[in-house]
Length: 130
Image 1: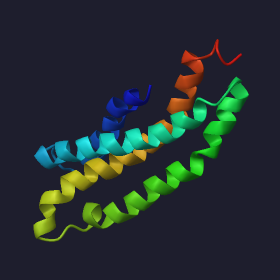
Image 2 (image 1 turned 90 degrees about the horizontal axis):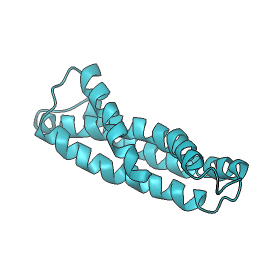
Image 3 (image 1 turned 45 degrees about the horizontal axis):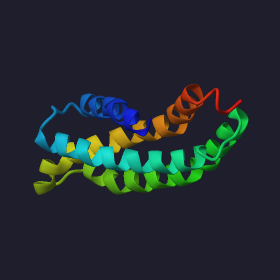
């Protein structure tokens, strides 16, 4: 279930490159690889909690308890990347596509981990949770 978030988070990478009018490049792909690790880390945090659920309501309640840690992880990463995304200097322009891939992909991946992953867990384990 956690691995299904990775392909969907690439949509955030594509949107970020489109909004900032940059083409996908090799640093973008390297950023996508880093993004996969960060998104999976957030997914592990969510799934560790969801496995404790015995009812559907409890699954959603446990998912809401993981909201703050996941959002704090993502926000601190986005703040750190924001200078490289929006204000690259002469030599840092090479790393801008990597930062865009990480930043926008993480933004969308966070939404997926907070909404999509708990719903997918309940849908796939619905019989067990009743």
